[in-house]
Image (cartoon, rainbow, N blue to C red; front, side, top):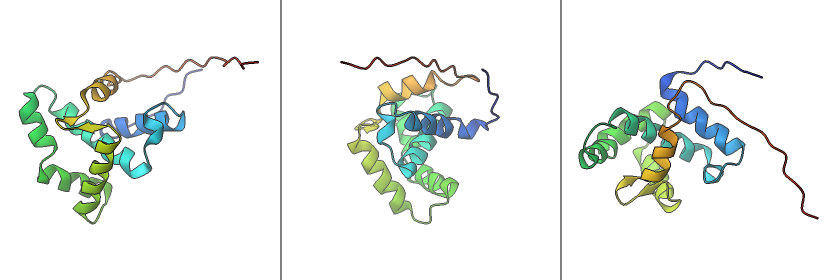
Length: 127
């Protein structure tokens, strides 16, 4: 079965993370909705600046203006909410001391394609 689902480029990571959370793919199943939205926006910025030097990239991704832009995009009235969500993302390992956790980001950036294939397999019950 093939399902065509139109999605805007800026919503691709949000949709992907929502799908992973719904399918209970770890560690994404631990994200609450607002955390998922903020992390998806951070990934969009990560992709936008992917060719930059890491230090400069993280300065741009985590600066005050970017946080304001994320708050505006998500319709959040207070940047403090964004700071709190980013703190929670750090506690959950999605953000580390350098910025976005490289391992997770790199895995997700591999999905920067126009298709996603899901294979279902039966889980054997243990007797």
